[in-house]
Image 1: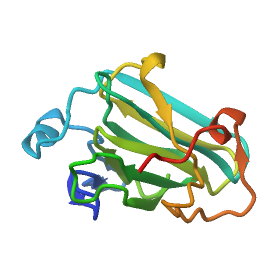
Image 2: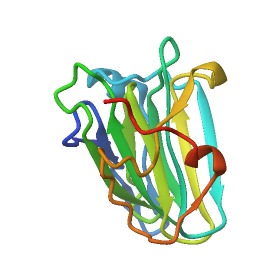
Image 3: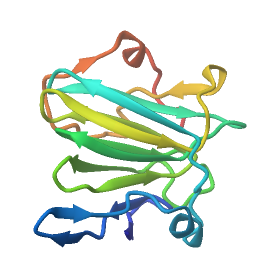
Amino acid sequence: MIFTETKLKSAFIIETERLEDERGFFARSFCQQEFALRGLNSNLVQCNISFNKKKGTLRGMHYQVAPHEEAKLVRCHKGAIYDVIVDLRPNSSTFKQWLGIELISDNYQMLYIPEGFAHGFQTLEDNTEVFYQMSEFYHPECARGIKWNDPRLRIEWPADDKIISTKDCQYADFAL
């Protein structure tokens, strides 16, 4: 596995190292030891799937607060997404900064999102499926969100046509 730290402290793009032959390839998508060696949360306790029928579907920006903050490992299994994270950790050198990357099923890249980050994505193709591995169980009482179009964060989403849930539209701007 190849770990590349992003411009946001403690967030990583993870690429698989493929062992290829005439049959195809084999690669690890997770290794507890390699995560722990880099100081990343390797206690992944829950897996989630998000299936999205239409291009332009936007989900986010979601996170959980203490005592149930969560790290996420995200991969696009089918289709393509523009994945966005925002550093909400007040003591971080990258506080209030965001990062957007394309995760495409064909490139097998993943995004490791540490605790204290908001996360969301927009689908770039119809019938897109996203797979999440989570370090914490879902706790509805700790679930939070910030508005996907917060004017102070200025996240640049790729598709003009957006399909957004009522719940995601009702989140407030981030209290900076």
